[in-house]
Structure formats: structure tokens, C-alpha cells
Length: 465
Image 1: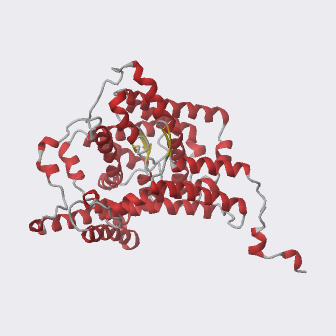
Image 2: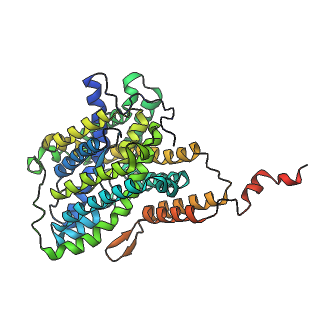
Image 3: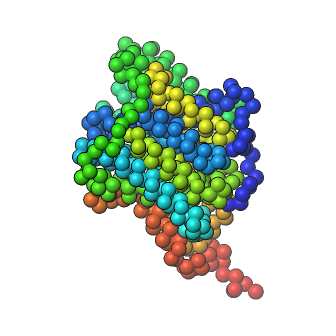
């Protein structure tokens, strides 16, 4: 991708909003974009472990602290936000019973792997990265990342119901009501993007969330007599559930025999999340017209992410990841200011010590988050298509068709079916397998149109005289 490609950004990465009010609102929008996923990670870990391993405040603290570290080490050049990674949460939860605090030592080690890979790329250069991860590979990978997350958004919005009604994400009220709330939330975001004037145009996610939340509150209190519970008000009324500080731990207080198994089970997942890291940086570069692989360099971004992750492990926090949700906010709003993501990180740290704010945000109904997520995840997938269009990928070329087909078929198919390949304690996800196959085929298959597809589409010019 060409550096400084013409992109109509409202705020460049180095630019700060004109006044503190706008700056605050834009940053709060980023907080809401990451909050649902970030707080879900400790909830899943604790549920899987059947114990209080990491609290929500800890996830928020590590998210904000990690983002500030990332911004500092990348010289404030990339508007990326770090949040809790979904890739590690299941193994962290299941491993807690057998390995205890060793799971956090493994998170620390994952950060070291990132740092080591960053230095390897620094010494060897980025040419091999760009060759292996050309647009024909990166585009479908980004599409896979977006589409793989869509099922969770559809479940929240009410479009996909569970066989057991108690397992439905939206709770104990009818599916049609969840759909109405979710669709209204989605439409508000779309209308803001299309029709809103001035500042409202750059806060579509915040506007959608506000309208969806207010409608949910009205419906909740209007339908109280029916027994429907749209808002879980116990989050704010039951002060015993409030968390006033992160769950810091002394992670080195472990049985040495548990460290090895934890490392073997958790560290290999870094191969998957480093691919996501690369894809997110290519994606945000495409959105902003910059080549972040070159400047500040993928080596520096990996090191920054790794340092943030290692420090999270040292204090008993979850593994972090670059957040595609926040990348989508940049694409939707055309606001790429690192000042904005930095203030969002500060807000996340502050929130980790202010329980009532956390609880109010936790009360956001699932259909509202589903409507927002559908917009954000769809934006991720569509940007993968845009990468291929901008790179003028020839879809009459047999090699290109094979690479795209394999990545989308394996990546999206396995992710939607949740059919990881299990090899002992190591899970091969659909995204990892699709990336491995896509990169391998891209490097090994010949470039010429070996199946003659181009001739079929364009006609045999040799016969024409």
C-alpha cells in the first residue's frame, strides 16, 4: 500500500480534536466499542474456571494500560486500541484449576514471543512479510475476521435463537422484541453515517448505543408487569457485585511443576494472534492511507503489543489483542487521532476503579450491543473486500481464486461451526489454518493462469485477426 494514499480523514493520527468536549465524546465512543468484548473475556474465564480468576476491572485496567504502552512504543503513530483477547480465554479458564497462577506466567511468555518476533522482523526486514501476506491473502483474512465474529452479533440482536431459550443472549423476553431493539440500534448508526450533520456524523456508534439504551429502559419499565427483564438492574442496585479495583495477583507464587504445561498449552496460540495483529495493522493502514507495516514498522508494533501483554501477565491480567472493533470505529468516523484512542485508554483505567460506571455499562442490553457489533463486524469484512479492490486483484486468475476460496472456506466455515482441530492442549483455529494454507498456496502456486480461466472470460484473442 502506498504511504499517504488519498484518504479524507477528519483527524489525522497526530491531530488532536479542537476542543476537550469533542475529544471526550470521541474517546467515550471508543470505550463503548471495546467494552462489550473486553468485559466478556474475564466473565468467560471465570465461568469456565468456576472461580474468580480475573475481574472486569482488571480487564479494563490492562486494556487501558496496555494501549498507553503501545502508543508510547509506537511513537503515537497508529490509532490502534488494545483489549482482552478472545483467543486465550478458554484455555486460561480451563487451565486455572490445574495450573493456577502459571497461566499468567504463560501470558507473560506470549508477550516475550511477540517481542522476539518483532526483533526478528527488525533484523530480517519486512519484504518477506509483504510477500507472504500480499493483498490476496490479507483481504480474505480480514473478511474472515469480520464474518467469524458476526454470529455472536446475530445471536445478541435476536436473529439467531438458541435451541434452549435459557441460552439466548438477550435474556428472558421474546425474540421479536430483541430483534426490534437490535434493528433500531443498527438503523440509528446507519442514519447517523448517512444523514447526520457536523459532529453527529462522527459518533454513530455512541448515538446508536444511546438511543438503543433509552428505548430499552422505556420498554423495561413499561413491560415490568409482563415479567420481561430487558435491563438487568441488579447490576446497579446490588452493591455487593460492585468491583472497586482490579484483581492484581502475585503471579510468581506458583508450583514450578505447573509452569511447563501452562506454557505448552498457551504460548502456541500466539501464532494465531500475531496473524490477527498483522491483519489489523494492514486494515487500519488501508483505512487511513498509511503503511504502518513500514512506519513505525510491524516489528515495533509487535514489540509494543508484546510489552503490553507481558506486563499484563505480570500483574495477573488477561492476554491482550489489537481490537478490530475500534479499528472499525476509525473507518466509520474517519477520525484516526491517536489522541482519541489515548484518552479512551485513560478512561478505561479510571473506570477500573469506579464501580458504578462499570455497572451501568454492564447493563447495556445484548440486542443493543448486537446492533452495534453487526455494523462494526460488517465493516471489518467489507474492508477486506476493499483491500482486494484497491489492489486490483485479478479474479480471473486461477491462483487467486484458489487462495481466496481456501481462506474463506476454511476460515469462515470452521469459525462459524466452532470446529477447531484439537491436538492435545493446542487448538488449531479456523483463522490460523486458513492463514497457513493461504500463505502456503500464495507462495507455492505458479502465478500464470494455469487453468486458462482468463481465456474463458476474455475470449481467445489469438483467433481474432
